[in-house]
Length: 424
Image 1 (tube, rainbow, N blue to C red):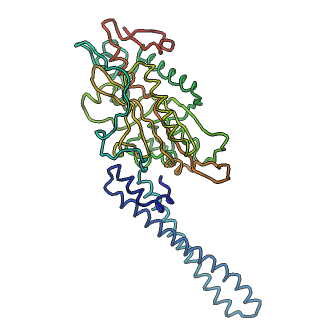
Image 2 (image 1 turned 30 degrees about the vertical axis):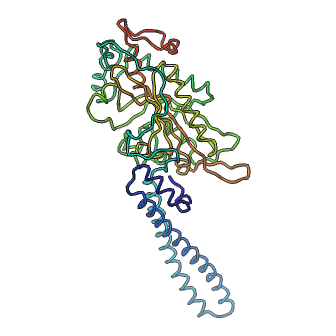
Image 3 (image 1 turned 90 degrees about the vertical axis):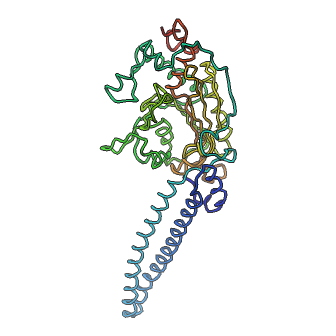
């Protein structure tokens, strides 16, 4: 959530930033927030003045009674009673303005960082780096949804039988490959100083609002209505919410957490080859890294986190590219996002496997996540996260790129985790 002080003091910059997201109503969103804020502050001022006067008048009643001026005291008592009714009305009005303002601020996305290009969608993203060679496969190379049938390692029909479309069942070496990737990603994160967290995979409404999934993505989250809980779309939500309403001690910074969880998303896309097989699922596994940093460190940290994810892809011997997302393609909460995409040889297309984002103070403002600097001033922290990595498309690329006439070769870095070198 944007800070009101920034909206007030940097109105034009905020509008210009939001317009980079291709928001046509950026100015209206900002000015409505300022109008509600003005009404709230004016009501607060009137309320404070009336309360102060009422306190003065209440004390004066006693003085009038002592002075034998019962008539004046009675009159003033009635005025104080009338003021109490006005105070109650103003308090109700103030609560209404505060709620309207909060709900409106929830609708305003984060302002993109200066480096983020303007744009309407994926076609306006910037390709800033590429690694590796596009694999050359034989003419009879199969896409991963055919390979998983051939080697009987993932079963979509069984998943559909017990849950529905988009919930695959992993079997045999398919299940072991999943477990191997999870363990590899967690082990690598631990080497880089990340503390492993195993969080709940359901969150309450306050947690959804804390990291910005609510109200923005309410329709995309599975909702356990009887218990008012949501299945998590990413481990970012429970892990970052560990620090909701927390004043972090400066000596405990930076905070670096990693967690593996299943992730759940209702939206599974349209029909077509681009969403077949493992390309888009309702349930999938992911290892997530989260960092909490001081403002002056956060963009260097974003680069560091990207480099870490790129290193994982290189160890898996997967060709990839790094994209700087334009304003119109960024997530609601993000100030800057890099996407990492791997190339799937049989599909002949790039697949997103990681987003690494800096949210600046957007989440921290919602979470009331702060620290005191050396001067004793309370400041909001910056939150960052990244997929490190999401498994389905990694598995898809490994299967497609590494297929041979004798089977699918496993990247060498995974051998100690899989216990086998080939799926055949």
